[in-house]
Structure formats: C-alpha cells, structure tokens
Length: 466
Picture 1 (cartoon, one colour):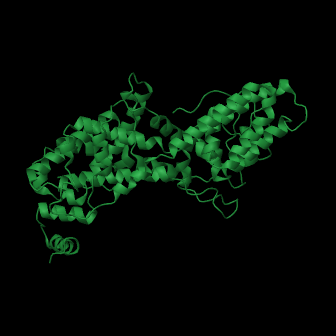
Picture 2 (tube, helix red, strand yellow; picture 1 turned 90 degrees about the vertical axis):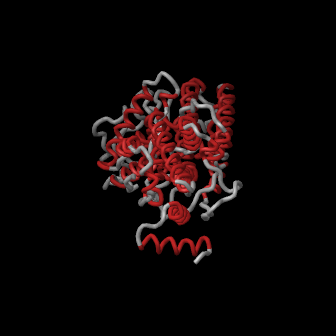
Picture 3 (cartoon, one colour; picture 1 turned 30 degrees about the vertical axis):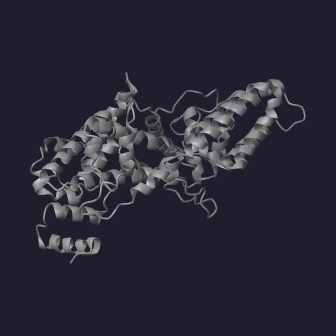
C-alpha cells in the first residue's frame, strides 16, 4: 500500500561594443553578469541598453532577460514605443534626408532585434498599435534598402502565423476536465476502461509525452511572470498587464486531470484482481515516463495512486508487486525539497544537451514544482533596490530558469501519435473526489466508523440512497 505524498542555454555572444550610454550615478556594475550589462540600473538605462546602434547590438541573453522581466515595470506596447522612439532619435530617422550609409549599418541590427522579440514573445504584438510602431520605424529605413521592406513583410507574416497558432491552444479541451458523478455501472457511452484502449504501458507513456509536449508548446515565457505579479509599486495603481496565463493554467489543469483519471481507472473495476492489474499497469507506465524524461506525467500518476480513495484499497494493494512503485515514489519524494527528483532532472537535462537522438532530448519537468521555484525566486528578491533601480541580477536568474524551460518545450516529440489514445486521455470522464471515495467504498467496504458515515452520506447525496 502506498504512503500518501503531500503534494537552454539562452546566451549567444553578440555584444558588438559597450552599451550606448554611460551608467548614471549610483548604478551598479558589480560582478559582470553579461558583457556590459549592469547588475542593477534604472529602467531608462536598461531600455537604452536594449536599443541597437550602428556599432552595438545587445547580447541575446540580455534581450531575453530584459524583455521577459520588463513587463513588471512597463507594458510591452509602451516599451516598443520607447525603443522605436530612441531608434528614430539616435539614428536621425526623422530627418528629410537620411544618411544611407549610416542606416545600412543600423538597419540589419534593428531588424534582428525585432525578429528576436516577435519570435520569443509574439503575444506582445497582439494589439494593432504595436504593429503600427513596427511599421512606422521600418517605414523610415525602408527607402534606404528595398531588402528591409521585404524582410519586414516576412517578419510580420511569421508573427501572424505564430499568433494564429497560439490562438488554437489547448484551452478548448478543458471542458472535459469537469468530474462526473459516480455511477455504480456506468454505460459504455459514459466510460470505457483505459486498458481497453491501450494495454501497452510503453505506448501509453509515449502518448502521455505527446500530450505534455503539445500543451507545453503553447505556454509563452511571459506567462510565468504574469502569473505572480500584479503591479510595479513605483508605477500606477493599475497592473502592467491583463491576466494572460490561459495556457499555463490549462497545463496545471491537465496535471490534475491525469491524477484523477488514474484514480478513476483504478477505482472503477469491481474485482480487486482487475484493480490490481490497473495499478501495476500504471506503475509500468510511470516507470517508462521516468525513462523518457517525462517527469510531469510521472508525478501525476504517482499522485493519482496516492490519493486517499486509492491508497485505502488494502486488499487491492496486497495483490500488487509494489517494489517498482516504491522506487518511483523514492525518486519523486518531496523530502529535502525534492532532492532526488532534482538530481534526476539534472541528469535528464545533461542527457538532453549531449543527445544523439530526439528521444534523448526530452525533458518534461514536474511543472507545479517549476512554478513554485519561480514563484519563490520572485518573492525572495525585490524587483527594485532601495534606490529604485531594477534588480537586474534577480531577473538574470529568473530568465535562466524560464530559458531552460523554453529549450525543453521546443523539442519535437519522436513518438508517433495515436489519436484514439490521446483522445481518451483528454475526454474520458473522471470522478470527482466524492465520486472516487464512493467508488472506493463500493469496491472495498469502509473499515471504521468515520468511513461508514462518509459512505452513507455519499450514497445519499450522489446515488439518492438511504
């Protein structure tokens, strides 16, 4: 019987020189974190550091870090407006006659910055006004080289395709997550057993990996920031952004659904031999998820098997060979801040970096713990220092964690998809917590007075029996 648990490298050398402005008094360079980037500075200085010139281009890591964290202090559309204004002002793009030689040195760098921004944070460009800023600044340099206009058209087309793809995210599947009431003998149209759809644990682990990677792909890096921060205390009383964390929330709901699906599948069979067979099946699925590097599905399966309605099935667990399950539990043990899991995750991450096949590249972290880590990193350090400067050193660490996640979520799934299995995973009805308890009590009778009273109450409320 189980015990119940309590619950990329983004750096590409690209600095072409020092930042275009000197640090103001009181701004700290400290230990160099990126070439030319301060450990803390005013927001204005950090924005200036983002703006390319004829002989300077910010490092890729700086671009990602600042674009990720800047939304805590300034709306993306306003940031883009200020960047475009600085480009126009510094390169004198508002003059009747342009210095074409100068523009030809500056133009490719501006295009590169805009390409990186639209590629990594396409949702920053959902509003028409942001597209207007892009067209305005590019329209000023286009007369100097026709290639700029063509490149801009390609950039906007790619952006449109990205936004369209993200608009087809997995949120539409959430309707299937609503638990159903317990039925003693559900009709076939209500429920089919998973083993009737997929009896091979290796195949199911691969299909779970398909689902995980598909859902991860829709999560934008900015959602990690927007999930935890309401507003900049030095700004207005209004938040810097609206709540746009739908895909992140959908992924958390997917984890919960998988937990309940596992518990439902175990509690459903009437005979303990069949229940034990389902338990052993899920143990094999979980072990294969571990081998693949799919830690999120692994933890969901373990959590489902550790839910009280499942863990109380002593007669069922007595028929299960639990040695493999205890090994998996040990790997995901929360003791020491999930020390064993973190060691396994580092091993999978190293394997991914040195991978010789697409399968070896797969790293799907235990998502709730990743969010928790980012949350505590955000809460543990101030966004601004006492002098009002942005604590850029904090955001470099945050960007490192989010950047690693981006690398993992971009891996192409090497397994062929089986639509019948993935459809079942998304749509098979799941019991509510009360439904699971009632199914559990129907399978193995209550053992004490507390369970008997709960069973009686559930039968009365759900089945209408006295």
